[in-house]
Amino acid sequence: MTKTRRSAGWYGKLDRDGFIHRSWMKNQGFPDHAFDGRPIIGICNTWSELTPCNSGLRDLAEGVKRGVWEAGGFPVEFPVMSLGETQMKPTAMLFRNLLAMDVEESIRAYGIDGVVLLGGCDKTTPGQLMGAASVDLPTIVVSSGPMLNGKWKGTDIGSGTDVWKFSEAVRAGDMSLQDFMAAESGMSRSKGVCMTMGTASTMASLVEAMGMCLPTNAALPAVDSRRMALAHLTGKRIVEMVDEDIKPSDVMTRAAFENAILANAAVGGSTNAVVHLLAMAGRVGVDLTLKDFELGGDIPLLVNCMPSGKYLMEDFCYAGGMPVVLNELGDRLRAAKTVLGGDISAYADGAECYNRDVIRAFDDPLKPAAGLRVLRGNLAPDGAIIKPSAATDALLEHEGEAYVFESIEDFKANVDRDDLPVTPDTILVLKGCGPKGYPGMPEVGNMPIPKKLVQQGVRDMVRVSDARMSGTAYGTVVLHVSPEAQAGGALALVKTGDRIRLSAKEGRLELLISDEELATRRAAWQPDPPHYTRGYARMYVDHVLQADKGADLDFLVGKDTRPVTRESH
Image (cartoon, rainbow, N blue to C red):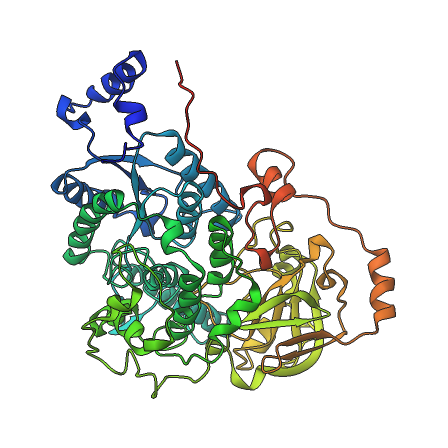
């Protein structure tokens, strides 16, 4: 017996409501037989000229449509909010949950049977998956793909990673402003996301490791014709998924999230994966916690890509991409279902590495035990994270005096002062940059080194904040301190001159003052007034969870798969 399709509630009724739904769709030239009960596939597109990473998605949507038509489906493309990581103020992360709401309500309200998510830029992939998971219709991802390698003076340069390096070189007087501006023109040479292993490419890699896309989706360059072919195949596959009733809840299981954590360590992935995976897990009802990220602690770094290595995503693709990484992880991967219906191990079948300097063998890694470290202590009772693969080894065990910046404005106004009382051993502390405080938890945790130290050749220091950092960034940076300063966390109570101890090995972050002194300071503390008092930002501040919970909105956790029965007329 054929199951009645969800879309029949819109287009299968022989009454006034059915007339309205079909008739207005027909003004686009769709014939009668398009409404004969075939699967209706939504193509959820985050294309925007203000999101350069996603500017190629219009073309990929056409590829998806070809595949849907070929498989006997009916494709319908719809837009949702697009989050331009490099363009939005105060931070795109403020709007990730708004995108998730947009995706969720669009999928729920329209008469579709399955959905293809077209995204790529940092927050679009997790935001779309959060929204789709909360409705739980058959879903599959097509990423926009990375840009071609940047080029400058005959060398490869990488998105973000080299921006931070060049910026520090200019501040140190080692690079001219003219060269800095010339490098800008060679950095971004095609459509697509950052070609370093930043957050965008990290999330695409983890989506592949979770089995929520077709194999090779993560690394194919945005302008490679094989990505258009992949889009076509994805359109074909989503029609089959509707018939097989494969939903996000079938694929995004605890085992899949554990595979993502292992893969994140192996590829040297972004610290931002933590808040995104936690939020995604919350939508599908998987009890993922910060402690689970310690699963990747013993996984070696296999992918030699910036910011943890020297190559770029184009090189990663040509070396074999994620199938090779999954093959190297081997039986460490958990058994988990994919959008293809089989186990994730099938994604590694036939994988062959074509450049062992780009993708290392498990027993010959770039760095051993390179997974993210979870830190706890009186300075971060609910946790903080650090990325050892992008840090200076000697600083991963460090004790020093704090120099505190009370806000991002305080930091920008003072970091270049010639008389700033800091040394290479100082620990820089930045407050007010968490989910509530900024608001939105921006990528400012990798604070530039004070100018007086940059000019002395210092390129890394221990830095501590309640902020995030770009996946393209590097350094000994402690991030996501929870609770954040604005929520009354211990970070709010740190004073310049306090001693802080960091031990990545022990997983500790301690403020070395007495409990009595901490209590005295807490009693005198008052939160800063909010920066926003209206609109979505006000709602966000009132309802956002802390970083250790994924920074989702409290009322969005979980899902609602109830059918929509009430009509609009």
